Length: 360
Ligand code: ADP
Image (cartoon, rainbow, N blue to C red; front, side):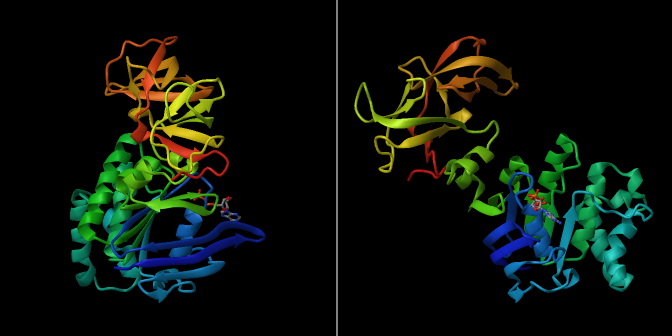
């Protein structure tokens, strides 16, 4: 088991800096997911922790030991890749036993560990098979089995589910989480899939362009995103936004957001930093918007109606911005209709348009 501490970690390729001073503490036994768009530096950061990529600056501590210059095999970590990296000519058993054999462990010592891993991962009936006779999910389990028998203090997963179909991805997500709950090891898991991050992580680290945007528990980030980037990255369909300027309400008391098309959205309970004249971006999640027959906060011109079965997504525009409203009612709303909406005050997020930061 190991806590991991990254202090001011950066990475340069020649003159180009791609990771810009990452500070991150991961507790012993914690499941931390690094998430962010393609190219934001997740894999580079993970590979620096693994020892597969040189660290250009900063300190990496694993289990209290400075690990910057330790060889990968000295770091007591196991890594599971997207590509599984199984040996095609070796059986499942021999693939899993490969590491212990290389380390010249006796089979009496490693066999019980392999049997336990195979049982845990439901591979007991497949130990004599070659990888080509396995499904994608089974291959991924073999890769995990190989990682598990090392009994590492730290597991690294680099987009391990990207090659699987949607149904299997959901199943393996649950299996990896169950595995972690049983082994209670420290995990760093890289993905670009925000649903994986939300469902698996103890804490999520949202990265963008080589920097951390926000760190927190999944629902903390979902409920109180620190900036526009995090707000738009987490959630599917994603949060709706519309820009405007804070004004005094033309009817009634308090503040409102005046939109480009002249519409006004009442801002009840706006924070003190929302002052008249400020350029603000209002955000609200599709599932928090209510369809109303009362005096509306906003009106959606519906363009597309998308039923998924459990819920229906209404797509349209508000103040020139594309919006989505998710309703669990089986609605009879048709494209071309204008729908009156209530935006509950407690579900509204306000951001400074220029800096993107959340108003507090
Ligand atoms: P992610 O895993 O988030 O998709 P990466 O860590 O793979 O992102 O890449 C981060 C950035 O570093 C990208 O802009 C990528 O082009 C760049 N990069 C990665 N590897 C190299 C390399 N060997 N040489 C130069 N640039 C690289």
